[in-house]
Amino acid sequence: MPRLILSMDGLVLKEMPLEKERTTIGRKPHNDIQIDNLAISGEHAAIVTILNDAFLEDLNSTNGTYVNGQPVKKHVLQNNDVVELGKYRLKFLAEQNTGGSEHDEAVSFGAALAVDAPASGVPPVEAAAAAAPAVSVVGMIQILSGTHAGRTLELSKSLTTLGKPGTQVAVITRRPHGYFITHVEGTVFPVVNGHSLDAQAHRLNDHDIIEIAGVKMEFFSQTVQN
Amino acid sequence: MAMASHVGLVRLRNEDCVAFNEKRGLAVLADGMGGHAGGAEASQMAVSAWMERLLAVDGEMLVEDDLRHAAHLANRAVFMASRRDPGLRGMGSTLVAGCFRADGVLLVANVGDSRLYRLRGDDLECLTHDHSVLRAQCDAGMIGSASEGPVALRGLLTRAIGVEADVVPDVTAFLLAPNDHYLLCSDGLTDMVPEVDIAEVLVMLGGSPQVAAEHLVDLAIDRGGVDNVSVIVVSSCTSVRLGTELG
Image (cartoon, rainbow over all chains, first blue to last red):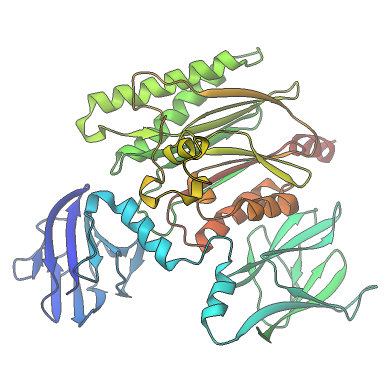
């Protein structure tokens, strides 16, 4: 049965199994988990549990509900997720025998990750592709103008720099959630679809037209067989 | 010089602290420990005590003893605070710092397992020696490499700022070369990103420290980001380039 471990300032206050289908958390006494603190709303959040799956919902609380540091409205709880309400933390444990107390969280997080994470050195993009069907999506650049017009370039590495060193250079980075272009050097910034970028990384969409150091190119993604 | 720091995906607080002073060529990074409020407190105290001591030296070139003294003061600040406040008991911090002197000498100081790397050409070299249990076991030939040891021992330090009444930092001097790139980082980076990938980023982006710093942090986050990730990238051509751009 999934469990919650309630703690504040690192002190474990109590441990609660998620027995009911709907467990409510709030300041008022009728809640299943009552936290008598002014930072907690009367009805702050609820967790709906179906077998081993648990869904957290913030009930429009004043100070919000956070999971692993991110504010959430609705969230599917994963093993070891840390729900934060005010100064209180609720650690969600999916299984009974996950061992380890709140105090050695760094170690248990580390151990959990060692099992789940791809071996170091394998970029997550490829690891995900290996687990998924034998196709993956790879970004491509086709040069549209200049002496290399017509040439294509596969963006298979995590970093690809484009442009002329000393004049203008941009980098395209491959991340699990897409490709991003960032200005690296030069007084002129890359132009995407006619708009000059600022210093922030810009996410590339299919068929974006990029202009760097006077050369036009098109970004597109391609599905490749592994 | 540029820095970037991220809380990571798992931890709730950023217990790392970074600071630099480009004009004086100082960069320092600390990775706090001790859970709760203590870790963040310890790394901030260590960094501010360190910077305060070195910035107070005016007009003279910093020497190795200045760094030792700064480490001593940082240690004392953290140690005394953890003695005073029971809520902070047991806190401590790593510290790695570079002092890029105008005469082309780099002084490096470290305590704990945060590192300073140098990229020269295509070669990435770690200029610091971790003060960690795994590193010590590795040196003693008990394990093949520090990454092979048991996960439970990861992050266990043999030396830290603020845990005992005094601490001895490793202080070493190196010669700077044009086009060198330097990286100070917490173990949140090196646990997630293999050195070959760090080298690639510095080779391609080292000339733009800000872009490089952000990209290194992104890489660590994309690969799990279990711990706080902090980096400072220093490019020894930055000052030269700035000079020519302004001139």
